[in-house]
Image (cartoon, rainbow, N blue to C red; front, side):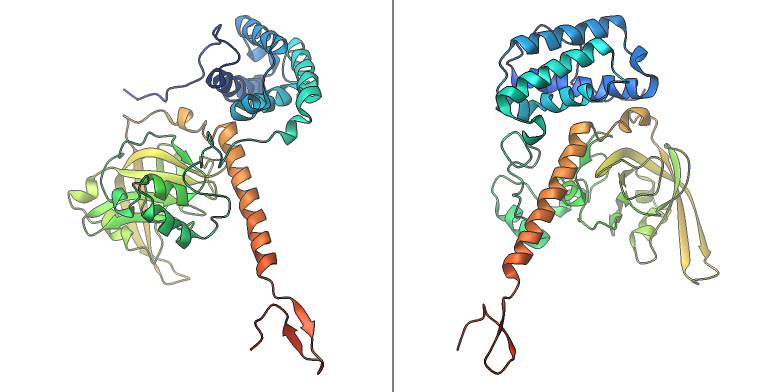
Length: 351
């Protein structure tokens, strides 16, 4: 039996709309369960009882006085904006409700797009993990190692099994997957997590997946400089242990996530071929993987990242680039011309 990814977006219940967690769950339900169905099959994809539930929920929102903080933490303002902006997709009655909500909220809080989301703040994905100015990987490593609240150790990933992670778990990038303990380095190029005792995980990027007839069976091409390939093909009892497979958004595969890094479950090596490339003369290792039948369905896993996770990814990149530009501007030497027409750094100390 496959384990199923549990959803935190149950049918709408008559809970108070002033409960932040309730708002968050309903925003998730609207954006990640209903909207994808409408995108695929149009307004008729919704059952009549679902339309009634959503309509009643929106009516309750119209009567309530939702604070800007609750909108930001739940991202309900984004769910409403998306419905109001898709006049050909959602049922007309629901679009009109959302347009009325948008007008009401904007009269109280200003433009909804300016409300933003939580990322580094309390309630945000990266709260307590890093700050916007933490753009140096090495500095962040030291910060994590010194933090008494962070059980950070790359050695955690060098163990067999799922380590308590569930297929579908997602991170903004490998750096945060390293922090979580599922891999042992933050190299954006990916590769095999391994040591002398075996291989534990594979992070696939770019052209690593050379064949994939289904999301459950594929061929991984190991890097020429990755010694982890020897652990995957050792033919020892340890090499027959299941391996954690993670796909990056940079992977050229139909099964890659649209953003970030996703854990796709435990896989076993089912075979391999070793050959010499006639052009590069390098030895090529093509390793076949088969996903364990006990893992959650890939149709469920491929729903990740959710809409809010993609937003976190984009916001992280935006703020990181902003701080990099700011840091570069602050560190840029000011040019002055001396009396002898020689350019000097005006910020340098005068000795």
